[in-house]
Image (tube, rainbow over all chains, first blue to last red; front, top):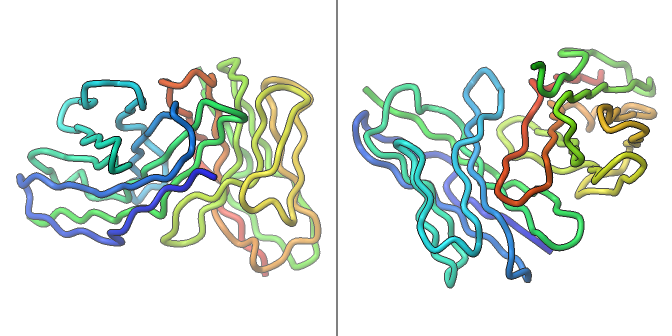
Length: 115
Length: 113
């Protein structure tokens, strides 16, 4: 069964520093997709970035990049030049391409950016 | 384009009452999901659907039921509400193509007292 693990309940970072949020996953499938979502205090879920299991390049979207290490089954989110508005909960998620394609989430990491 | 619409936004239920959380999407997505999020926690999958007429259980289905009679609608039914069902409920939809994200509704905050 697919499983996502985020081992950092909370992270505190100074503004303008880079931050890495950890995500490891477990799956028996060879084909799957990995997602990161941001949830600000207002509660909505905001999609940030996607990485496919067969993608050879690490995904990037503006200040967000995904450090994908397939052999280690990790998909860490890197935020460069952090801003106060980055303070939020961050969730890693995975969807397998086989079967019913359930979208499963990790426990989340609360990121706080200090001025 | 409304996206994914959930109603109501807030609700207080008494123990033993029943209710239906509504979810509608106007993007013609075949995949739809229901999640619950307890305070400070991640999203747990309750039920999902891969198309009209097809539903399946997720990680925490007990105490809930769903139906999918149309592509647009995916209501979640709570029977005999319990305090343990106090949570924020999110509905999401997606195309089902691997490299596309799921779109989320704004959530329903449910309190059972």
